[in-house]
Length: 205
Image (tube, rainbow, N blue to C red):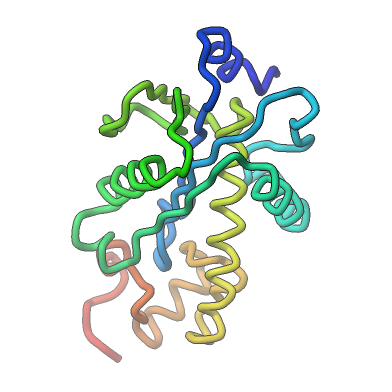
């Protein structure tokens, strides 16, 4: 698969700066949803080998790739919504809000934007939505890796503040161990109350 197919299309139109946008953490029961927008240099000599959908890459390799991506990036921005905001305006609105914020805060204005997923009608010009874009587009893949490594490291830090939930292992996703712990002790401030109402009665333990 040509991971630069989408980028080449815009380069051929005279676009110079192409931003890739992705989010990580849409599904977990706890922790933030994290969005990243990144503009990468696209000359052959600058392409980083091994970039793919972050979920398909080992943790160790992701860490190394994330550092290379950040060093090479023309510009990148990370934006996040915490559990409280996710409960307040719902996950989809948080993703839309943070993707838009990440793109608009880039220090270089992109000529075109590639966004992972279905058309979510972001208020952005020259945007194309690519389903499973993190595996199809080099630039979106870069955004997915940076966002995933950032969020995973954040959840490891939160595990120190809120021990017992296993955040360092499952990163807030709904594993059996995680759900059993919420039932046993109740949630902490990182938990998305709207995501756990099926098995938590709302009573503080």
